[in-house]
Amino acid sequence: MSAESSIEVEKQPSSRLGEGGVFWRVLRAHWDMKGATRAMLATEPSEARLLALIILAGLIYFTGQTATLILSGAEELQARVGAEFVSGVLMRGLAFYGVAALTGLIARAFGGAASWRETRTAVFWAALASSPVVFAATLGAGALTGSAELALAAEMAGQAFFGYAFCVAVAQANKFRTAWGVFGVTAAVLAVMFGGLSLLFGGPV
Image 1 (cartoon, rainbow, N blue to C red):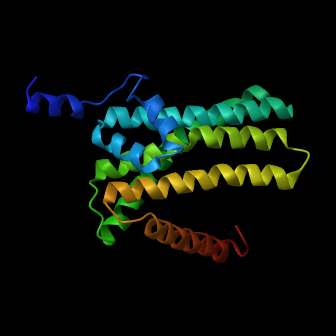
Image 2 (image 1 turned 90 degrees about the horizontal axis):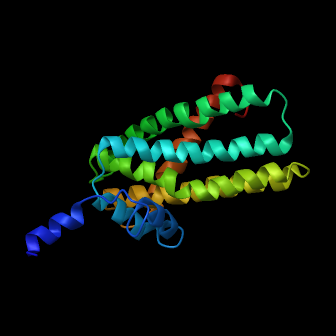
């Protein structure tokens, strides 16, 4: 096999859940987020595959929320599960497209090198890579309903891991030296956003 054909083979995205596939990349992300992100970006996923990634992340999130509802013995379970599907898969997926667009604008303002598709890849990949931890944290929060403090700590642990995955993925896509700059800008944007909402509604959000 020639060198050119070898390069072409390496660039072809792997859709199988085997070595080099999404399943192993998600596992790898928990100890090597940078490497797993670079591997995902190297596949140059199509828009259809990006949509599949964010839908899969949403389904994992939805499964965790549904399990929590069942564990808590929630009333009107069928209606609430339906509402969770709409918010956790459909609306959450649309929201991530908005987050990716905003992230791309801010990253470019700070000299980011990522294309719009690479930015979507980074953001969607962060959502999927962190979904097992978010799932476990959601179940933990549901099982710890007797202690509000522990339930809140479990939820915050899941969100913290997503924040870490997001900052690392965006930094890798934009070829920033570290993820700390992304973290700082993200924190500033969230502070301004929640501060504005607090002023708008006359109290903490």
